[in-house]
Length: 89
Image (cartoon, rainbow, N blue to C red; front, side, top):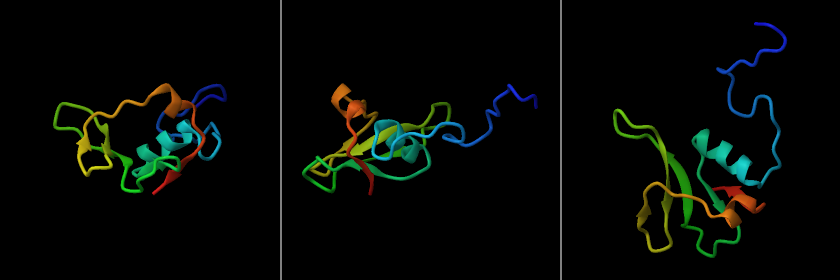
């Protein structure tokens, strides 16, 4: 490999450091198989995790909601992407 090439097989985050608690950091944690939540979410049972998709489809992020329901294919709001209060749960 040449000096100016990037190893695409390297783990996510191998080349970039993101602030702990930021959305990019939380997304990296989810990809690594960890559950994440926002500190500002009042119910600790509300969190996100990565789910392997069915054959032929890719993985997706699932949210466990405050009432115990599952939100398939969670999509973040801009306020969630700009938040810095993400934590591993």
